[in-house]
Length: 102
Image (cartoon, rainbow, N blue to C red; front, side, top):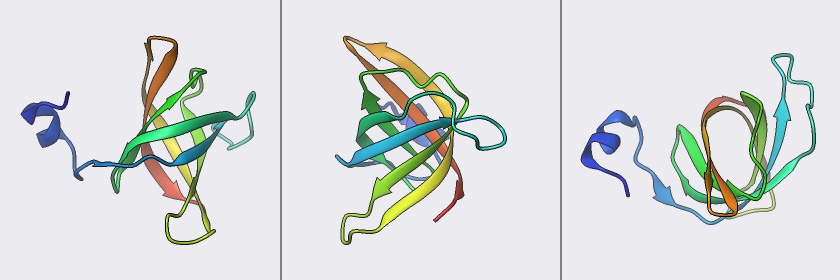
């Protein structure tokens, strides 16, 4: 549940979004680290994304691939992990977008 306090900390409102997302953990040089995670988004804003995966995101940075809703175009973003916490058998991962890569 999002509280009024949480909403005020965000720069952009979050909107429900159920998209298939590919998450590739990377190091500071943007080199792949470990296996790609398949995930589903919960919500999306201009500044970030919350998603669910059956594996945790262990790196601080990741390359996130989103399929644009109105086309076959993939949007690739560099993202910083804000939070990764277990929710039952899944992991809730929150990321902040750092840079648009394509």
